[in-house]
Each structure stands twice: as structure tokens, then as C-alpha cells.
Image (cartoon, rainbow over all chains, first blue to last red; front, side, top):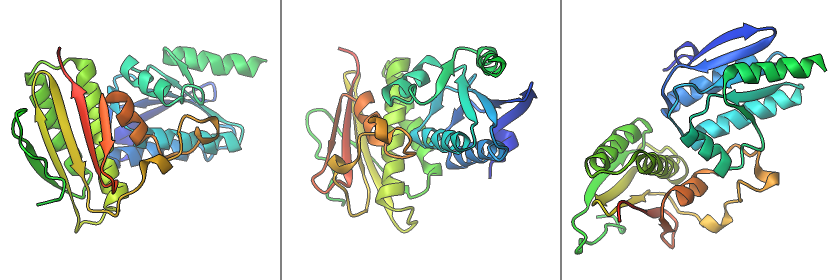
Length: 123
Length: 145
């Protein structure tokens, strides 16, 4: 069974959780479940802000999209949000085709997604 | 022999795979098919498309078709040439009507966690058809002209 630590690395910057995917592909059921568990664990804190970086990830499936939507929904209930970054163009196309680019804010780089959260907090 | 076993015609013979209903079998099958397409000169975008569609088809067959019943199998056939790759995936479930799957891109469905697999298959492959019963999907991706 893949562990959350095998799938993602979590850091924190000014109250924002920075989550980076370690694997180049999140396809195996165990990897998808581990990613989901890692993200859902972060949602236990109300209002959590998360940046999820897909740097180096070249493949994913609709199972991963489902997990991201669960995380989005859970966060939205408590005033939190997940923003995405570093998405390979082929994968971004999957988000665009499924219209999930309307549900998630997507940034070119992790630092831009982080800056967007910090900028929002200053308002 | 499953009802969906395709007939050999002038496009060549089919390779048949029988997969256990276990998601770990998906990646190995993908690697075999994609390795074949890579050798035939398919480009990265084409390989990405076939990988995604094949994975969605196999996962759907195991999850929704066979309901993860380990006593059921997924049958798959494929054949490839530089011009086209054809893939057929059949499960042992009771089937479904693809027309009843809600449009996942509709605003009211955007937050539904499921229902995107069929849509992705249709977007990334050039032809996608389901058997009347709905427990078998056939997909075609064109290669080089």
C-alpha cells in the first residue's frame, strides 16, 4: 500500500500548504487513494489553503480528477480552497476538456499560486 | 469465446488479452499496447491519448462493469498499424446505456466526482462505440496518414 509520504511532500509557507506530487504518474489505485488521503487530511483544518503542484507528473486519470473534486468540495465547506500549479500541457488539456479549469484556479508555477493566496489574504 | 471477439479481416489479426479484475493489471497492459504504438511511430500526443482512453476503458470495465468482482475478467483485443490502432474492451457486467451518463461538463455536474471517463475516451479517440448491451467499448485512434 502506497503511503501518503511516498506520493506527496507537504510544506507550509505563511499558512498555505504546498503539496508536491512525488510520482511521475498517479494511476495505480493505491497511488490515487494515497493522494486523496493526503489531501483530505489537510482539509481537516477549517479554511485550509492548499497549492498542489503537479511538477513532473505526466499522466493522470479521471480517478485523480474525482479525488481533486472531493478535496475541493470539502475545502469549500469550510472556506478553504485548493489551487493547482505546474501542470503539464497535456494534463492541463484534460482539465480544459472536462471544464474543470472552471472549478480550479490553475497557475503556471507553484510560487504564483502561493502569491495569489497571499495577495487575496491582504485584501 | 466472448461474444465480442472480433473477426480477423484484411486489417490483420487481433491480439487478445484476458485481464483479472484488478487495477494493477491495467498498467502492464497499457505498457504492452503503448510499446507497440511507440515502435510503429506514434507521437507523444497520440500515445498520451491512447493511454488515457485505454486506462479509462479498462478501469470502467473493472469498476462499473465487473464491480471489482475477482471472479470476473476483462477481455481486451487490439491491433495496430501505422495508420490506426483499434482497441476493444469487454466486461462481464450487465451493461449500461451510455446515453444516461450525465454530461460532466454541465455546470450542475462539475462537482460530481465521477462520470468523466467516457467523455475523455470520446475526446481522445477518433471513434468510440458501445455494444447494444453497453458492456463492450470499441475505440479507434488514427495514426499517420
